[in-house]
Image (tube, rainbow, N blue to C red):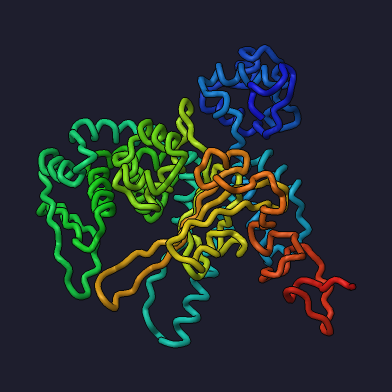
Length: 487
């Protein structure tokens, strides 16, 4: 609920206690000092910080003034993603015998968010070790004694949490991208030439385009000693531009990346290396698609991704990712969620400001159109979905192929899903001709089978957690976990 739509004495329903407490501590204020500035008692502030009292809109306005924040930014519920991730963790079969309720999880996050994050980190470590042990067992069964180098999922989880916590918006990187664009005299009609010249003039780096060669798989390689940046000729034009911009980011604003990661609590070396790559990708998108210009163009074209691709010399995934970063407090775009999956259902990229829960581990609901898009490649699919909690979303999905070389080389087929709350769907060109108000158009969906209570789903792969199965060996319903209805 926005402040502008509320009566003067109405309450803000999101849980702000932990955020207010954290902001107060960040500003080195005790409860008495903040209470005095808010014209309330310290005891009442204490109740607010522990989520025992709601926040009035009038008090929210005072808090925004004290902490010099946009009211929408302050009112945003930063606990929701932590609650969702914990709920997913506790949906694991490991906790099947523990009758833990959603209310208890929310109370834990509200009262002790740091402890809740510690539990999530512990669960991530457990999942990492479990995955590694299973991989090792599988590998040793075929190649006994082989030395293995496993990739831990935990660094990816840490970086994903860091990006989600920042709302996938980094004003420092946006400012640096604007500065570099001016210094490089960036030419949108010929970006490769202007980026190549900037690398030579600013850093003494020569760009070499490598011709294709059998078995050569490197797309970009920078040698700090010779100061030569090699870009593969195999890459399409949009990818060449992106890789040049990525390298400019690493060379020009590495200290900014490091500072953001340190401030964001990304501590391990592996996670920081992955975080630097993610932030360099963010910089590359910001350099190619300037924030204010891109937002204005996106709104004017009603978020037509294909037209945005042509205008900014970018590919489908790059444009979709850039659309998820439009969260400047004074100029916001539609809040999107985005995920990228492979044909096996693995989620390799996830981010959400739309409110949709995206699973932290494993795959998502098979009814999401990000999976059905594989059935008709290169076609954009639009879908209205209704979650078990009643929330509606409008989503588009399309497959893409990532080619690695010439004839016979393996190709990666991925699917990109992008969506928003159903209430914002009319702002997207893809909603034209779709009856958004017709409830029969909505696909009943969930998050994951283990977390979904829908028992009438023919695509259910696993039973829901904490649901007693009443199965009859003599009957068969739509799935093994769906009891058939009597006539």
